[in-house]
Image (tube, rainbow over all chains, first blue to last red):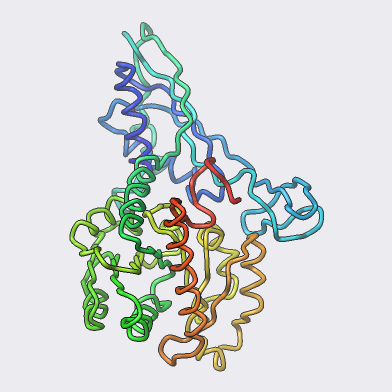
Amino acid sequence: MCQALLVEVADIAAAHGAHGVQTVRLRIGPLSGMDAALLETAWPLASAGSVAQGAQLQVENLPVRVRCRDCDAESAAEPSCLLCGACGGYRTQLLSGDEMLLVGVELVTES
Amino acid sequence: MCDTCGCNITPGNREFAFRPVAGSTSAISAVSVLKNLLQKNDDQAAHNRRHFDTHGVLAINLMSSPGSGKTALLEATIAALRDEFRIAVIEGDLETENDTARIRAQGVPAVQITTGSACHLDAHMVHDALHVLPIAGLDLVFIENVGNLVCPASFDLGQHRNVPLLSVTEGDDKPAKYPVMFRVADAVVLSKIDLLSVLDDFDPVQAETHLRNLASAAPLLALSARKGQGMEQWFAWLRAELAAQRAHLQAGNAAQPRVRPDGALPHAT
């Protein structure tokens, strides 16, 4: 996943003619299957020698939220329990929590 | 420690791994994007799905822990259905072609993907396998993922249906422990139920409760491939899903897993 991220970042840097990347901003939800801490650990290794070497990862961890199809309430939920916080029903729709998004990058464009 | 995930970076050497971008004269420009981190995988998966659709094939991604009976389920399924459907299998394992040999012994085409150290299949590996799989005339392609309840859940392969297996020799709280995997299930196979009589700590009702807690309406298909118990409901599910896929294609739509692990893009509908 880290290498996939690196490819995306390198593509963006190349498209903008950047020669470095200062910051990479991500949004990750717990139901994406991506572990933010692991990603932060792997990033320096994966990016070493690339245009993104030395870039800082900024990870925004998103909460798990659901909307109930039965009572229409929106509530916070846990990854292992996506029941409606209001009525307890299981016919819920995930509003947030499975994201693994690259939100933005800050590029070094001249020196 | 391995050299792929970064676990060899410790608090003692972290400062050498992170090197700030130098240069006070540098100009910084912010670029906004909103992209799935696995966009390239997802693009390839969409390509694979179109390939399956072009040939009227239903592709099913079988996922589970190692040893919960994916290959045994396939052996029994092929033995029972090979005169009804034309079936092929894509096998994913870290090493060996043992599972492919078991499938070929059933008389159907099988392609082995050996992933080396990778703990999951991705869409590019499946694409490579599709280049050597004779797909014309097939009805069903099973993709047996690498035995792992974690990473396979995050990689779309181009399949139409996700089927995780949970064997009764595991804990009945597996759906709660691995919500990313079980949330995306279109059906869950509860395998090895012939052993329930000697395993008093596995409660199928509890397993189903944990599954429903993930807002999943996926059917829980309890069976034993080795003893031939409960197989008819699994076959009925396969027939119904293949018919649904064919109907989708006639209407000009591509079938997709009910819930896809696709970031913020369309959620469960």
